[in-house]
Length: 490
Image 1 (cartoon, helix red, strand yellow):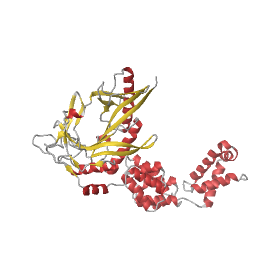
Image 2 (cartoon, rainbow, N blue to C red; image 1 turned 30 degrees about the vertical axis):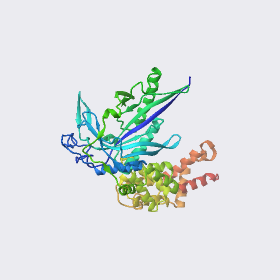
Image 3 (cartoon, rainbow, N blue to C red; image 1 turned 180 degrees about the horizontal axis):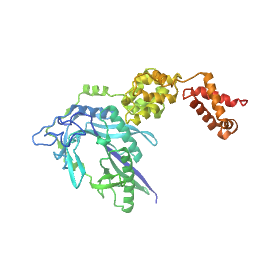
Image 4 (spheres, one colour; image 1 turned 180 degrees about the vertical axis):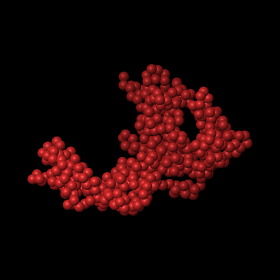
């Protein structure tokens, strides 16, 4: 009996929008504030209070919907989604039901078979819940500072066929929202949370069944998305193999949590359906209207998106795909790179310095390349110094680190630190002579042992650079070493 398994995976992504105040009141949004200090009668759900929409949150949501190629609604309303949890003091959440702000979009990501479009079902605005804290003995504490924070929920169609595809999508979407400036996307702070919906289509001898849908709640890392989905797909297949009644319509859909320590999903409760929430229009909020002029004004504010920008660099400037992908991940860094190129730095060498020299310094300091605070002009000078042969690539690394704390130009620093590259042929020939004299066996291997020739020649070049204190021109060193090795009379 032939059986094939096809995963069907959709995603719900919750993105906290980067606003100073909450969605429907003036309370500040502060992650590290004392518990329950950023609250008011509105976000605490006191009787008689009236919400007022946060215009910036609405515009950030529209901007995201546009970047996701969605149809933007010019008329959208607000709905009450009723449920009772301790972290939702009103016993309902203000959300959007049948008239979402954005719908019918798509977002392109890289998949195993190449780029593909993932369909976006909808993106709607709502308010976040508070936070339950479970690690204080046998009690649960509630911090309502987060209650009412603007939240954009993005819902995809079940277009992912594997955990890896969903993982890649989440990383790309995170890059998009941070690039647009609509969210910091700090997952440790809960500013971006993922909820995969997973079930499996099983085909046996031409007959198809589908397992119930499991929604895995509140994942806050890319790794947990991939691992939880992979486990859940296998779990559902194994459950069906043990019980053929485990199919959609006969067994209930579930909400499950991810236990990272055990590497398993765990049952939480039956999954709610739309009717369970008893949606109805919020009587305290007027609909949000968007004129054609306002829509175009917001569209004009959209920057060139990271994927398109990286492709342009590849097509027009010849930047390698991997380098383009690394640099474009942060918008400020991408802007800085373009400014370096505009200042006259050769593109290929500039890209190499960004991805090797500057990225390593940024990683060590847990920031971005732009966050290092070095100007485009100084970065461009460093590129040109290497390109013109004034310093070598090894010295560039040393100089780049010095530039983080010194205001002097790269050339001034190179002169001060003794890193100016020596291109004097006579001086370099003397270093080659000394290196050959001190390493007779390596010379013999380079000349007579084919298996050791390449490594021996590389060793000799390294010895010359060492004797020069790193000042010799590597290209000239290579030429002189090769010439000397081919001259068997010496």
